[in-house]
Image (cartoon, rainbow, N blue to C red; front, side, top):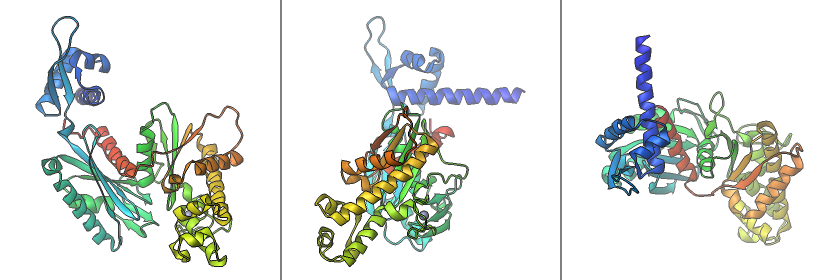
Length: 406
Ligand SMILES: [Zn+2]
């Protein structure tokens, strides 16, 4: 029984320290009495914890603050440069890297083309070089990086960070977390891209929502559910494959091997494919003009542009895609009952009318419920949102494991 007591004491002391550090991060500069009030701990406990944090360089003193009566109290704040975390977004077209300081402020962001992801070990070695060279550019701060969260499209095995299958990359059974982690001098954590994106997007807009369903509408389609502040990743870590739910029996063949998946009829890639068929068969149109007459050069952005300019063929393709997305979303909403849906990804950059079309597609297919409180909104659409989510995923793990240098 005695050892239990000791373990519990240690755990409580750790929790208290993390609560104090969290309070300093969120609310600093702040004095000790105010921290005691916020964390519900005694002033002597706060004295001991802040003493330890000061000694470790995680917290610094800003001198005396102001006081209406009596001695002015010493103001403290968390040291933003105490440590850093990196986040990497492995997209099929671009690799994006961000580095955040302890206060979650971005100190570096970088993009380069993904290029050929084969052979996998050559690509992983390139990734290691990229991360090392960018962190070296940070000078001494690079040595205080605790780890890198890596976001990757596809099915990622929970815990091991093994890429079970990534149709976008054409990868199968690649131990990315183990291989990259073995090459770098710090922790590597691999997560699904949509999970990372959802973590970042859901945290950016207040905490009054109970369940957020975040959808990534881009070259592919993926999603993730965040309950409160916790990501729901499923029993095996592969939840959220909305893009591979079948919405059209005997529909087009999907990259996953099935037919008629949402992704095969409504993703950016599907929109471009449908448009190129139209252009190949029907001569002159705005779409044909935009691609210079070469259907293989069409992308989803051009189809949106043509639709905007009044091209009826383009408008039909966009309307059908929005309806299919509405159909897929209504199934998700019927099953999961979120109070917020955030729509992110490249397709959402094509103006507010696409959002309205998706909303109306959802209304057509969703189970009627008069008291439903559901907000359907566009995401931040920031380029580094997924990389920021990868940072956040790593920070969550380091925080939960009490693995911060404090
Ligand atoms: Zn599929």
